[in-house]
Image 1 (cartoon, rainbow, N blue to C red):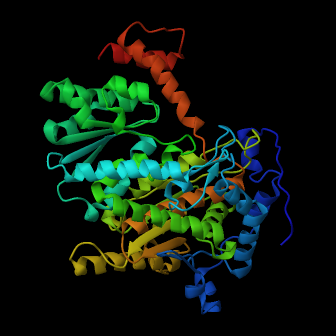
Image 2: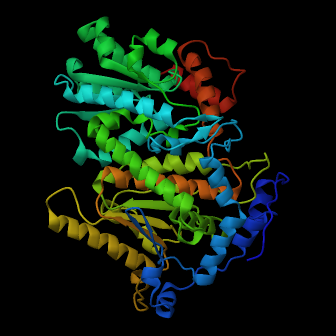
Image 3: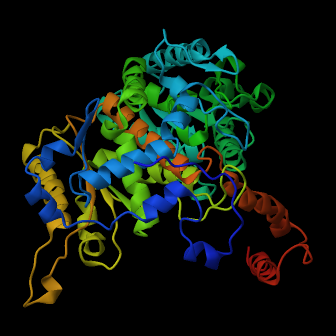
Amino acid sequence: MANFERVTAHDHPSPREQSATPAGDDPVLAAIAALPPPLPLAALFADDPDRATRCVVEAADLRVDYSKHGIDASMFDELVALAGAAGVPERRDAMFAGEHINVTEDRAVGHPALRAPRDATFVIDGRDVVPDVHEVLDRMAAFADRIRADERIEHVVNIGIGGSDLGPAMATRALDAYRHERIRCSFVSNIDGTAIADVLADSEPASTLFIVASKTFGTIETLTNARTARQWLVDALGAEAVADHFVAVSTHRQRVEAFGIDPENMFGFWDWVGGRYSVGSAIGLSLMIAIGPARFRQFLDGMHAIDLHYRTAPLEANAPVIMGMLGVWYICRLGHATKAVLPYAQELARLPAYLQQLDMESNGKSVRLDGSRVRTHTGPVVWGEPGTNGQHAFYQLLHQGTEIVPADLIGFATAHHPYQEHHDLLVANLIAQSEALAFGRRNADEPYRNFDGERPTTVIMAPRLTPSVLGQLIALYEHVVNVQGTVWGINSYDQWGVELGKELANVITPELQGAPDPDRHDPSTNALIDWYRARR
């Protein structure tokens, strides 16, 4: 494979130019765009009797089968070489070295430190942060044990949004089989009052613990919901109850104290932890209470196992690298702009939503690290539902639609429930879908019953959905994001795109309640404000 040199400056193309020159002058992306189209899967398997076992990577407990992608050995080797040429190993190592790879915010990207074992070292800005991480984990564990032993507390309500909600909400549901039998968890994120109203209607003040998760303790959605919950509690039990029924995941002591929360019940995290990467931090306090500190440690150990795999496995046997490069090929060479995540496990019903934020907030970027415009498509639209429900909804498009949707199918050898017949049928459907999507079925006489096949899938299997395995799945996708962001030359660790709408909402809110400023907005926005004011 020839050596490729990164180009670090681009002109700013118009949208038309961007579409016409999908790779620009980036040699790696140009080489990806020049790769062949997918090869027929039936021929690939016929020509390579060992393909079904050769195109499999073992990463901790995960079996990642990429055999049903239309690449042969030479195309695979070229993709791997392009990962090296793009600087994936160097950027990966820089992340684990605590360098400030989040360049737009001048920060390290330290979420792997959250799951490092106690005797590890992870240096950020000259400081080994592992002792700090474990000091917070120890405080969380002591608090979780106290709540689990307190017969009064039966309901834990996490109030957050974005990464302060999606991670613990997804993981708590996924690991419900390990939940303390007395304690149930609810999650409130949406500013829509229905969300908090529904949870409060299903709660008893004396048995409810609220966790308010906001780093700055200033996120408007979170604080609005928290104030509503506080008033509900005060109305029932008095203001003195706030200290016993509210805790905070935050770093802003003054605001936490002003709210009435005991600072001893405030758990912090760091600016080198992005929200969508934070479930292994104090943001996961609700999960730790639900499953217990020992199993939370297993969850972190699973993440750490994939961290080690990503750091040490050769690129050609590295699951995040392989999955990441296949994804770049689909987007940049073939124009497949979406990706389906299809867990065949009801417990993982929230995993697609979690991965939407992880991937789309990370790599939904149009500006490169040097400030120039990208000249290619970047992150995919991530979506999905659990099997087999999705089979009776959108799989029609997956099989016979005009849009090719690469998909990840996720399943487990054993279930937590006792109904073996159900599980056999579930797994049979997973396997059957991967076969049908790949090879299709020819029917010349009835074209509406013809299935072209050649629809790519990655099949990820594990023995059982345990805390460790869930951690492994999360870290796998985190590092896929790292690979792809590196190839596209973008910063996967900022999220400036979420700011503008929030800023404008803060401007418009008082205009809905008081006098609007017709000179501040465009005519359409002013008309919407006027329509709402007339009817609120």
